[in-house]
Amino acid sequence: MTAAQLRNAACTANPAILPAIGQGDFAPLLAWLRQNVHGRARSASMAQIVNDATGKPLDASAYLNHIRRRYVDRAPDA
Image (cartoon, rainbow, N blue to C red; front, side, top):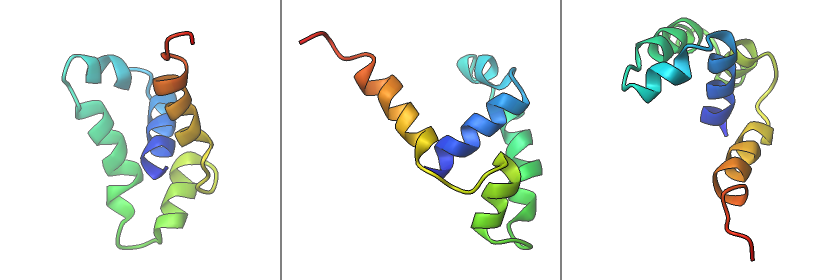
């Protein structure tokens, strides 16, 4: 859940992240993570880091959307 929510926030903040990942370049994502997550690990709780980085508390919606896109939307018609 956390990874999905952070991924959404990172890609919203920097739309170049997804195309870069598609080319095997993780530097833009890593830069965002360093600034918004890794650099705060000692000074804040995980809940606070997620809230600050994404603008909302941890919730299941980003993860559920990911699962829906990956498995339900791609499922063959029955």
